[in-house]
Image (cartoon, rainbow, N blue to C red):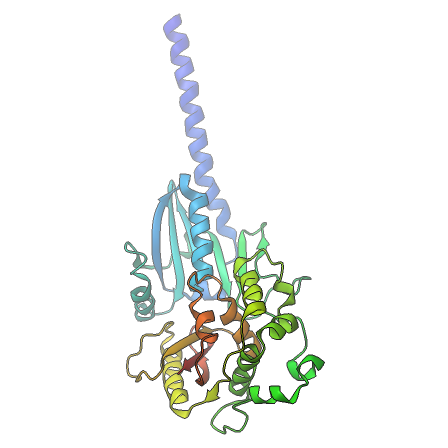
Length: 334
């Protein structure tokens, strides 16, 4: 009789285990109804960053968010039984994935290029490249939509005040010097405005912070709050003057990157002529280009901020179409 009881108890335990495994599999299939971005549906290749287990799900989610913010690529969690796959990017051709892979492989030794598995995606984290998410707060970047398990992050950073020429604080004629590229006929109006806004920062960092970035003063985001604090203490820097040779250097790289969909500083055919370079993707508004580079979110070294606030004296700016990010801006300093 005792043996029969032990046998029944064993069967009940086995049924319980099998039931829990069945629920685990259903978790994945239930999430397959989420709506993927259009870019994801067109994607043929991605870069597989890591393979972890279900027990490391929260750590993998954190890695996905950090990667999305730093590298500005959409990331995808794919759950296969007890395995969690983390893929990144949306590439229509393998050669485009290869360009990005070459850039990432130094930090992700086990990364590899794989075919897209849209049918298996359970969660994804989007880096929004177009319009910022609507919010009552003027500069709320992360927007969580918990019902569909999406985190949208936009690179658009809105200034809260009107353009400088409408602000009495900037009415002093000395700030006319900020518009140093106004007579350069080879530049577009947006390219000229990049000079203008960056020069305003450099001529009066504290006034720029108070005018455009007051909402960042008490931000919980360390990149935002540190920028505001730094500009409050920074001494004025030289006005950047346009340089045609620097412009040609920036334009060549912007066109080359845009046509191939490449991100980064490596050049194929373009000649290097600069001491410092900043590249920005997805933003068309000149003021927002500058603010985004100054915040430099996701870049621990703050390399873009340091270049923009270094004692260079000349600058070349080019804004060109980009195959993957709609538009890219290259700024070459000397």
